[in-house]
Amino acid sequence: MAVTKPYQGDERSSAEVDRSFSIPVADWSSWWVLLLMAMSARTEGAFAAFVREVEPRLRQALVATYGPVDGREATVDALSWAWEHWDRLRDVRNPSGYLYRVGQSAVRRFGSRPLPVSVFRATDVASPDLSPELVPALARLSSQQRTVVLLVHAYGWSQADVATLLEINASTVREHMNRAIARLRDELEVRNAC
Amino acid sequence: MPADVIEQLRMLRDVLDVHAAPVTLDDLRRTKMTIQLEPESTNVIHPESVGHTEPGNRWTKRALAVAAVLVVIVGLAVLGRQDRAATTPGSGNDTPSTVGSPDPSTALTADELAALDIPAGSTLRVAKVLPGTGTVSVFDTADRSQICMATSFVEGGSSGGCTDSGVVSTGEYWSFVQHSHSRSVPALLLGITATDIGFSVTVNGRIVEPDADGIWYALIPLDTSEFTITTNDGSTVVPLGHPETTPPVVASPGSVPNVAANQSSTTSSTNPPSTDTTVPVANRAPIAIGDQVMLGAKEQLESAGFVVDASASRQASDVIELIRGLRTEGRLGNTVVIHVGTNGEVTNDDLAAIMTNLPPEEVASVWFLTDYADRPWIAANNQRIMALPSSYTNVQVGYWHAFAASLPGMATDGVHLASNEAKQTYAELIATWTGITP
Image 1 (cartoon, each protein chain N blue to C red):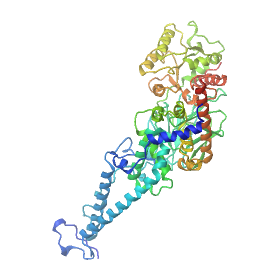
Image 2: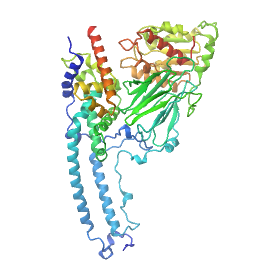
Image 3: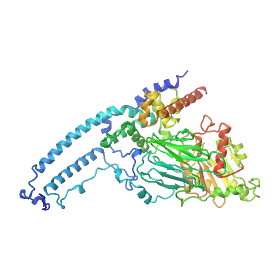
Image 4: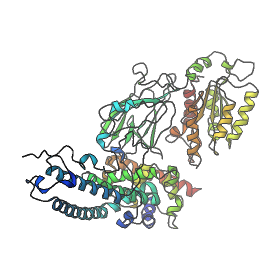
């Protein structure tokens, strides 16, 4: 039977309470709090496992695109975003690819640095074992070419894995890679010949 | 002998790993600010959310979310006890919402977006970009001074408009086309920005590479009837309309006058072009002023009917003096083309000084070409150049940097015109943009 008497705050008495409720309000709240705490702990555990699984490849992909400094920073931002939108992310078919694009957005929000300058600065990856022209040549590649060629040849990804992460066709990956290698060879040979 | 490129790339991994250490949960916990990001594939724009960044951190948001749930639970319990009494406080209406990204359900509909009445020249905000479900419609405009764009990436509808500047905002789908009807040279220019890595553009079966800013440009032959945009969800064939059959969707109230079309007829006169001060202004030859890039195509430009003054290492300050002298001598005609900035910064003051001597009542059409070189000042130069039409009604921009990026025959330095093909294309582009016929 419905109770039509309006809410009366602290003045209500037990006699005015709908007897159909068998559990007091305090018990309801306690029960839900416990449930939420349990769910929260479970969520954190799942997120930690998610980070362990996704982080290495996400970082490699963003580093391949934006260089080690901006790429790692974008990885932090993308994973932070993942935590905030964890419920949504669990239903995403390709979470790594999804977060890669979140990372791309993050780089664009980093601020005033113009892209060609922020991408792959030679000072980020200076090494005596590498040709000094390699990193500048990488920086001159298109973003997609650089990403593909580094993921495949530096990080050892399969072309199929790259295609899955970037959500492009395998043939497109192959084309980017071949063009990038040809261009790198061309530029390094020209510079070395000078 | 240096190692092969592939071997060097393998070696590069170790260097990259040192400089980009794994991201741990502790790194994430140290993140102070909430990251307000949306992947572009689900980007939504709400009037109140444009340009707005929520402060706070994720722990605060979690606490708010938990508090909100508790309030709801308590409210429901009380409601139940009162059997949904209408006067119950603390119900869902008082529940604080979880702050953060806008709810997709609140994204603008096409009608709502249209109701915003986005002015010409402004940035079109796209609500709910759904790659693969939208299409791009590119319309030629009879008025070549106008860059017209029309996009229909909005779910369930379309939105579009024309912009009289070439300014592109990062992360938006954007397209424009320039079209000359008078010459059979590649003259269509397509620019699309897309942050979706799965986005690609194919013209006549050839994949077009985006530039470093993620902008796709393509030289599109005039007889091209369509191009293909491929997204994560498949391919969309985009027809290229013609003014005769597909009128522009929206007229731009702020567009500049069609001065190029006007002067095209004047320069097609049978009289030979000249900068002689005794020759009427309308019959004076168009003047092309530039640096070493233009110098490479001097012969081709002269064949096209231009009087060329180009020299290596030229700076913007040199151009100021040169134009001042030409004006003083009364040698300026209806059309002036300026391509400078390869060798150094072109400031707004430089541009203002140049334009002081090229007033619209004296020079109907001034074309500035954007710069292309792997040098730090280029991007800023181009931004300033591309912003000129919003300040000067007689200025139009030729997007050289868009073409140079994919132009065969460029020198290995990526700046100079090496092959005859490149030089010819450079000259023909300028002739096409300006409507000059030899």
